[in-house]
Amino acid sequence: MSSTSFQASTLPEDKYRGAVVEDLQLPPAFSVQSNEAIARAIEMAYERDFSHIPVLDRNRRPLGYVDVAKLKATWEAGQANPDDKVSQYMTKFQRRTSEPYTIITPLTPLSELEGFLKKNIFALVTDQNRKFVLAVATPHDLEEFVRRRGL
Image (cartoon, rainbow, N blue to C red; front, side, top):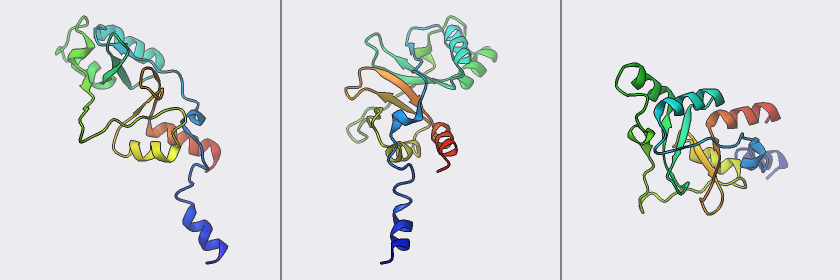
């Protein structure tokens, strides 16, 4: 096997050159509690330019997420009141033994994150014990990382 064919066969696996989630330099997570009014959640999401907002319970455990554009459209169509709680409009995370929870931390390799994002629209970056949501990663974040690094 020549060195050329060896390099070509390892390139897809090493696309990110060993980079991990923290190398994406994501902004700190913005999340809302399940009892937050939707008007406030939409306002805060637009201030921070977030398209999806993690929804947490009072113990800060992730419950689900709100799709901001969908929520805003529901509100503008008169199907939601500004004081309604985000819990009424969130998409709940499915936690089943058949689908174990994937833990994405700052030290998760980007290749693993990429695999996760092929099946999900975003990833919550948490600490190892899933007690704190640290950031939200999207396919766009990976694309920007590759573009910036010229990978």
